[in-house]
Length: 117
Image 1 (cartoon, rainbow, N blue to C red):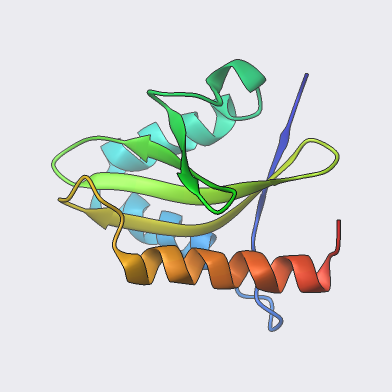
Image 2 (tube, rainbow, N blue to C red):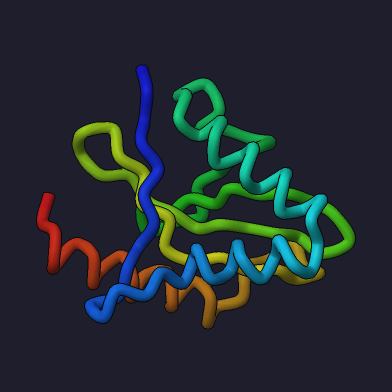
């Protein structure tokens, strides 16, 4: 079963996750490659569990890569085997900061309003 991975876009057409990945590519090519490989793996259901991925609550999930900085892409599932990546973060903590959870939730809500299930 194949899933598609799509990137959230704002009403104006900006893609925060693509921007995050572009910045990551410039600053840490190793972590960039690991996240890109992880996004590729998410297309297959067997990778929808730890250590690559795990639920973080409110129907959001994280793709994770552990390094000097923990790199995460937050996403949610939609009907039709679609994965929507809404937010990317890097931090030293094991926890996802509340402001980043809120950003991901807001983007998820925006997506669902514009593209209902």
